Image (tube, rainbow, N blue to C red; front, side, top):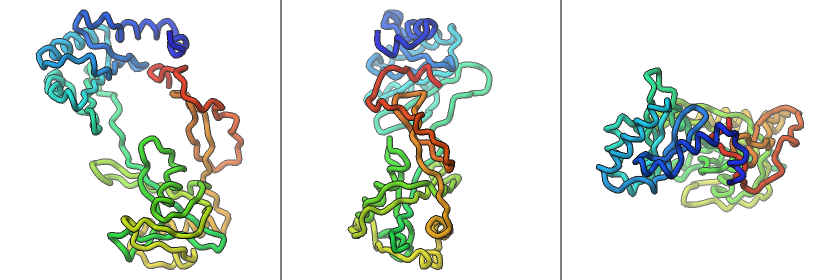
Length: 303
């Protein structure tokens, strides 16, 4: 028995045995992970039969089993290598939830009440870095495609990346300037940004650790250190950058600090995540001291 299983109560262990037992295959039923919302997630794609006919039998038997046991939301992952099985799921009432490079996730809401399954990711996340040196100059760039429009450097978060690290990485990749995160000065939410999804753009204050510019000429047209007042007075077609210039001025001259990042232990998975706040509260003791990954918790049964 794994450490994670030892931390589950008898009811949770019974649910796992009922819905994820290898013996289900003998009954032509798919194994899945039960969750705290009475749902089932089927993500072990190795168990899928190769033929459409046999997969249809498994899926129909599984649905009957789940309905009989009052399961609610069903999640089924279909890898690209078995894309021919997707039509079987849609005929059974499954709908597309989201798609990645190597799989598609489909869902089916069994109750007759309103579907309560969460939508897929609703926002894109990006950030810009306000980098101010000891001469009260701010680091600005222009994109190669818009060489006359000045802005702060920045870009989109990578998968699995913390916001406070994104700004540092993007500034270095675009300008060659090393820096460290100080705080979040503000953020902007834009609805219907792309693909019917919104965008959140964070403005992060960074402390420069170097000064020599070595910009990425594949992406960046120009890069320079500019007096903050000059950035404030700059005529720009970007209202957001005009707002950023005023935040930068307040941060540099008027004592505005923004939100710092404090690590707090997670409840749904091992490790820490960042809480961004503007208080003087000391919450360092709430961070986990164990950095290595552990299987001591099962996220299916945590909130």
